Length: 217
Image 1 (spheres, helix red, strand yellow):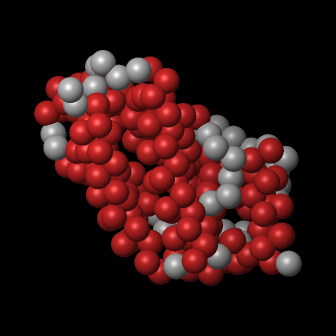
Image 2 (cartoon, helix red, strand yellow; image 1 turned 45 degrees about the vertical axis):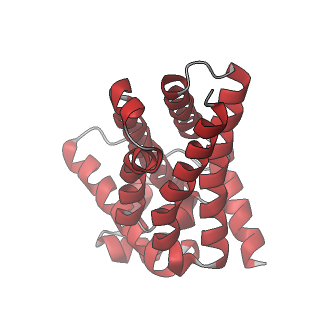
């Protein structure tokens, strides 16, 4: 039953059902919103999504319940705002990775390249332990598409003669391998998440090496 409730909550976030938070106009209000979101992230990391209630969050953020409702009409709007903050951060990581020079993609060995591409995301997830409890199970986003596009670019640079349909399929598969591994890790062995995060670049590197070997004349 708890899992069903959680899935419904996450579906609500993805569908945009929560009431919209109030956008503060003054710096002081924006700072207060960030404090509330930080407190929500801490609660999720320590106790899970169910721990986030408006009253509990007000106590953790050391703010009045009236101030809470001034900025957020309900708990789902808090969770939605926290999701949006993660999406924005990951979008910045995508731009960072896409800004790497193509020569970097071309010259590195496969596993080293995958480590370079994955490290910004891995470090972000390790710094934000609320990420998986909050974002797991949500619909795919533009950020997923952006990462797949990055992988397509890598393959285009390293294997310029590769058929476009194969390049698209390989890039989608690489993303699916990474996302699937994290899904399994969070569902079955969340305490070993760091192990999975460290191993994913090795797996993707081995897959890329196999693609390149098969494409060699």
